[in-house]
Length: 297
Image 1 (cartoon, rainbow, N blue to C red):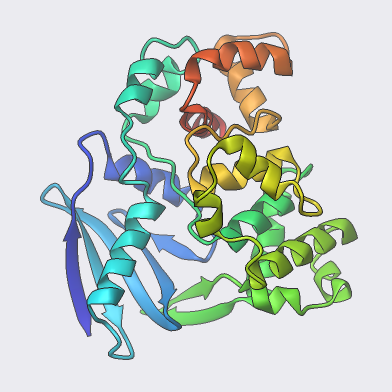
Image 2 (cartoon, helix red, strand yellow):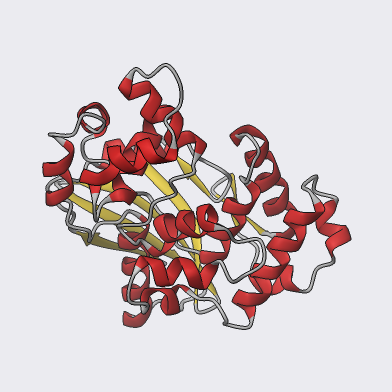
C-alpha cells in the first residue's frame, strides 16, 4: 500500500542542496537519484520504504507499507523521522546572521546556503561511524562501515535496488571481539563498538536521555564515561544525532583543514587559534562545523 504525505520546510531550506550532500554520502542505507532520496526505516519492528522528494514548495514522502501496519501513530513517527533526519525544525536565522559577517563562514555560506545538518537519527549508527573514523582516513572508514553493515545488517531488495538496515546494538552486544576484528578494524575499536552497543542495548545510553540533559558539558561528560568515547566522538554524536547546536568537535582534522583553506593559512590552526576564531559562533558551533566540513567533504 502506497501512502503520500506532505510536510512543510523552512524558507531557508534547499532540498537540492541537501540532496547533493546526500548523493556524496550514499552508503547502502539509502539511495538517491536526480530528484529524491530513498531508504527503508523500521517503525515498531515493521519496515517501511520511504521516498522523499520536493513538489510545489513542500516535501512529499511516499510511504510503502508492506505489512498493512500504517496508522496515525506510525505516520507521526515517520514524519518526525524525516524532519529529524533533514533537521527541518531548527531555526537558523541567528546562525545565518552570524555567518554572513564571519570571515570563516562567509564562503561556505555562499556556496551551501540552504544546507541542513543532515543527521544520523540512529544513535548506535552515529557512534559506530564516529568510532570507525577515529584516526584513519575517510576512505578506509567508509570501507569498514560498508563491511560492518553487510555482515551484520539486514538487506532488503526493492525495485531492483538493495537497501540495508543498520545493525542493531543488541546484535553487536552479543558478538565476539574476534568476529568483529575480522572486518579489519583494530581490536581496540572492536572493544569500543561492543562497549557502546552494550550501553545502548541495556538503555544506559539513549538519544532521549541525552536530550534531557541540561547542557553540552553534561552531555559530553556523560558520554566520555564510556570506554572508547573521548571528547571528539562525544561531540560528533551530539552534533550529528542528538543535535546539540553547541556541539563542537574542536579536535577534528577536517575542521582544521577547512579553516586552513578558508583562511588561506600556511598551516593548520592550533586549538587556541580555533577557539578564538569560533568565539563568534557561540550557540551554533555545530552548524559552523558542518558548513566548513562541506567545503572538503
